[in-house]
Image (cartoon, rainbow, N blue to C red):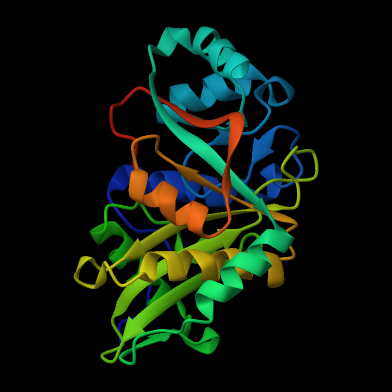
Length: 266
């Protein structure tokens, strides 16, 4: 088996973003207004963080993300970042409290898996397996994080993957504590990177993976709530989140400001 020499994966731009975020984790873990992320520089309170910091990130990387912000903050961001003529990519914010997750998601995971699929054991989540997950996610149009981020080496996180009888990854998901003590979302876990092999879609595996990741967030990471982001036109994903007990948070959005039409991930 070939050793994984670099934790980064993807094209040059994506790898540069992964590396920059990994190197900033220690700084962002206690910076007011900052969010620990694994791709774009993110803020959940830009006024507290400071617009100069966000403008610098736009200048250096061509994109920033605002998490869980209201419409007024989005309009302020348009003005503060107007010199970059940014394009906006929007997602709605869905959330659920821990009790709801335990009640709803446990029923989903109790249904079990098809006989030829199994969850990758914790001891088998090696850097090489994380590399396999990176490749799998990229194949599904999802820009992955570094292997160090996926394996929880940088911040509290939980990677979950399913494999077939040939040990090939066929589904994946992730949960992480990305908001620091200054955040209005402190103790809320982000769940994402949910992906299923196209050949296995229609079996309810997406909902199963989402339920597993939400349960891991509250039972293993100690989250008091979970959050997920979904595009406004992504009806299947919205239905999946709602089936796991999450509901849209009115008046709150996730917005990427980018100098490119590419929003990195679907």
